[in-house]
Image: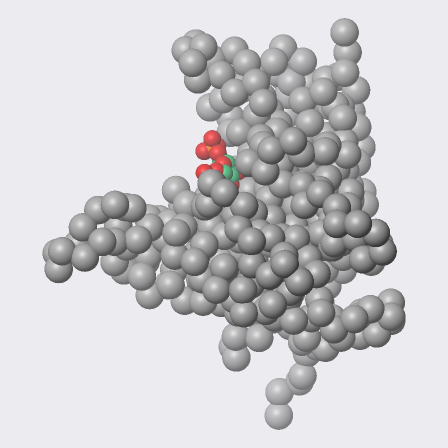
Length: 327
Ligand code: AHM
Ligand code: MG
């Protein structure tokens, strides 16, 4: 008989009981896991076989074809709605905020399919989410929360079958999917201290477009570390969290075509940057923006707001933050 490894459900039940929490969060997590598994199924049976097209295109039967990221969005909204626990959802795939159940308990911010340029190659994509809880004691509060107010944030790497979840003040945990499609074997993630294993991750093709401060820091440090870049935040951050190092997507400020500058950065604050920053904090690391200020402190003004991102081992992030803050 095979050994039984602890399942995610049992891990979370123990966690909720230890911290004297309700079962509502279990229901929400069950919805997210159902969505992630179904997205993975579509990835493997649809995207990999070339059955999915571009949004708005028409297939040979004359039917409209949905893009994989729209499918992932609809799957996720379906399960979140059924959970009955979500007041409002912010999705990368919806311009507007989606109201699900005004009597719910949580707000969720998610990107159901991040890094979609990897799909035609069968390479990993991410499903990233952050969760905040409504103010149970006072008047209804703003749904646009800073990352420091999230109660949990996590990511699935699809179709690799890993799930990483940061729980407020309780660490970041990684699970993998077993042969019965169950997430099992919690491992606590703690960013390693050993500089020899540190990795740098950024889009090197962009480096001449970064600020002088970011460029000079890279010039001075890059030969000490290995360089890795997959082009899907969940996959790149997955490595950084395990091996230690720094993932960055700096502001683009020196592009030869000024129209292509992105002084605010590329990644989205609420469902990309703050999600990895939260998991990183719970694993002992930190994250800052282009001003060297903590990502988790940024109060969003708009739900699709962008930010530059530097996230990973505390020592590296603090070092580059110091440089970014220089006059
Ligand atoms: P997307 O939401 O359009 O997929 O973009 C987000 C992705 C991240 O996963 C990844 O870190 C980054 O964009 C890669 O961008 P680039 O191709 O510019 O390196
Ligand atoms: Mg995205």
